[in-house]
Length: 327
Image 1 (cartoon, helix red, strand yellow):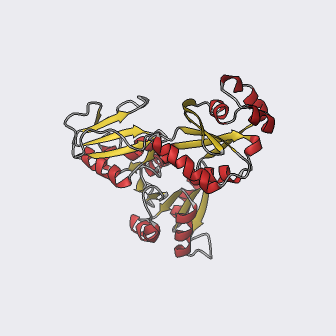
Image 2 (cartoon, rainbow, N blue to C red):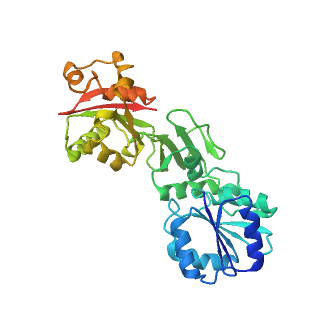
Image 3 (tube, rainbow, N blue to C red):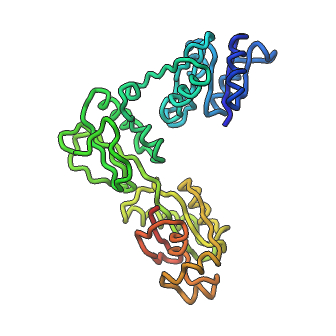
C-alpha cells in the first residue's frame, strides 16, 4: 500500500526519507518539486490514497483536507508529524481508517511519541467501529455507533451479544443485558430481538451468507433480484450479510447472476462440473438438469463447495433455484 507524504521543509524531506526506508511512499515535496501546487496535491491525496501523512503543523493539514472530508467510513487515515519529529498525531479516521494504528507504527519507526485523542482508546475501551473493523463486520448505523461510543465514555453499561458466540465480550461491555443503556448486537438477521426499545441498539452485521443459485438460460436480472430479496426477507436475513454467490461454470456469464453479485457487492464463486459431481450425491437432483448441463443439482452443491453450512435447502422459484448457506 502506498502512503502519501506531504512536506514543506528540508527537515520534512529528511523525515520523509526515513519513512521511505520502511514504507512505500509517494512524496509530495514543496522544496523538491518545482510544480508543487498544494491545493491540487490536497485534492489528489484525499481522493487517491488510504493513508496520508503531513509533515507540517496540524493547522495546515486541517485546512487542506477540510473540503474533502466525507464520513468516517469513507475518509482516509490522516496523520501529522511535526518538523522536529517529536510527535505523530492521528488526525482523521482513527478507527475505521486505521490512523491510530498507523500513528503507533510510524511513531516506532521515528522514535517519536504517538498522539491519539479518541476517547475510547485512551480509556482502554473498544469502540463499536473497532470491533467491526477487527472482526470483518459491517456497521448498520454510524450515528448509533457514535452514540454507543459516547455512552461508553460516560461509563454507562452497554450490553454485548453475539448470536454466534464467536466474539468474546470486549472491555467496557457487559454480557448481561439487564439495566443497560445500550446494546451492541452482532447478527446476520434483518430484525433482531431486543426486549427494551428505549435503549440505543446497534447491530453489527456479520457478512457470512452464501447464496447458491441456478437458473434457466437468460433469466431476467430484475426478476432474480426481486426473488432473492423476497426470500431473504422471508427468512429474516439482512441483505448486507451476503458474503458470496456461488454457481456452476456453465452459468458464469449469466447476466442475472452477475448483476446480482454486483447488486450485493459480493464475490461470485464459480465451480466446475467436476467439482459439483464430487458432492452432488448428498443432494436430491434432477434428471432434466443433468441432461441440460451435466450435473443433477447446482445451488446446494455450490453452497457446500463454498464451505458453508446449508441453513435453507433448495427452493424452486419459477425458473431459478436458491439455496442459502452460512459460513
